Image 1 (tube, rainbow, N blue to C red):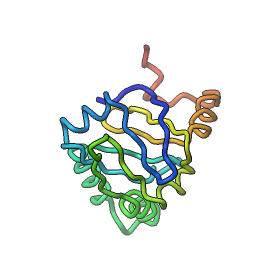
Image 2: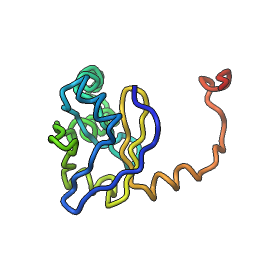
Image 3: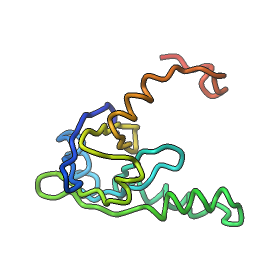
Length: 146
């Protein structure tokens, strides 16, 4: 399970080092093989270990392609997906198209969300965290206590 927020850097070639705790988990679960794709709703990337990716991909593929919104989601989610492998130093090279999509540059945030990670431009992440939680609380959250 991935949790926490990690400030990391990307080099000019687009390589980023995965923090040791996350890297160890990825190596144990999938020999360091990951899938990276564009988020369906926000300007960040989703990072899955290979075993976590397969059921999510199956769900997206099973959606009814006759629906225009479904096709948009499938194009973004599956059409942008790349399979990557951590190198001996625990780094991955993020493809330019995905770096451009998420506006990734030198300073990044890698955020654990249980079965997946999100990769954000640090400024975008900080702006998101500064937003207030205005609006109506979804019914699913109304009885949740921390």
